[in-house]
Length: 170
Image (tube, rainbow, N blue to C red; front, side, top):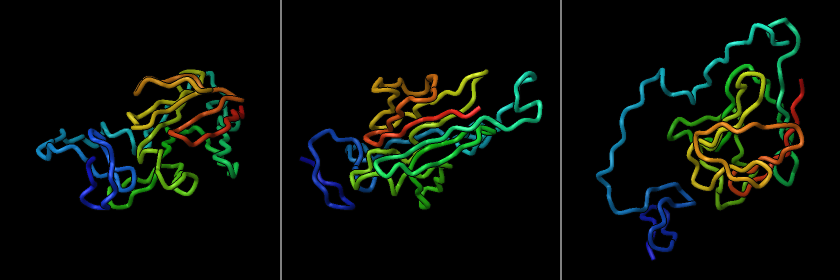
């Protein structure tokens, strides 16, 4: 068993992150990451170029994704004028996703801070897992990280253990 040095919760050996505070639990503290240039960040909500023949380009209403989140069925409507990120807010790490599900999840925090994103790709709506720890699923099918998958009305989107009903409004 290993114990998180910050919140003192015990986990089985080889657990990578603390589910309570997100602390990295493996022993190698010399890990480093490459600095991400601002134009590569993507998480900041990059603009989507309208298609020449799209209804949005012709002046009608933009495409909207309606999510009914969790057991409370909290409704969130997202106009897809830019990429929409879903995750948990963390002011300490300057993470503020457009859809914050912090209050919709159980204390075990099965949704990553930067869990998934929804965007328009061509004429379709897609969802992309952002390398989350607990995975993203469409209708119980696990998505490969960083590979966009089509999302449609009536689909069930699952982030970790959090379920969402999807409706696409054109």
